[in-house]
Image 1 (tube, rainbow, N blue to C red):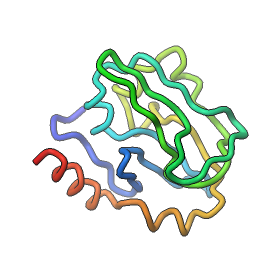
Image 2: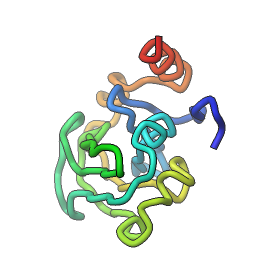
Image 3: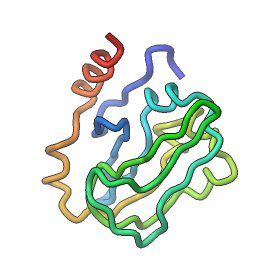
Length: 134
């Protein structure tokens, strides 16, 4: 990954460092490049089960690394409809490709328009992480 901690355009970002991508009415969620850099080598990923209903901002998983563990929060409200099971055996994929193969779960959103208002654009998130590093 790039040294400058990549932020991808066209995604939505939370202050908890999750990203959300809308694909055919489903929201794909993962952690940002900034978050995976902060954690370093990810050794374990746990996500709530398929069928779990979550509210935006609610804890729905855990990421562990040699350095720390961090909760995963859902950026939108809805039902978890798919979990990336590839991460169970290969959690390092999150470090290698946080915006691609390292996605964590998919949600069928229940109030997407409302939830998107509380998330940041790529420009806003870039400014946010820059301020955190000052």
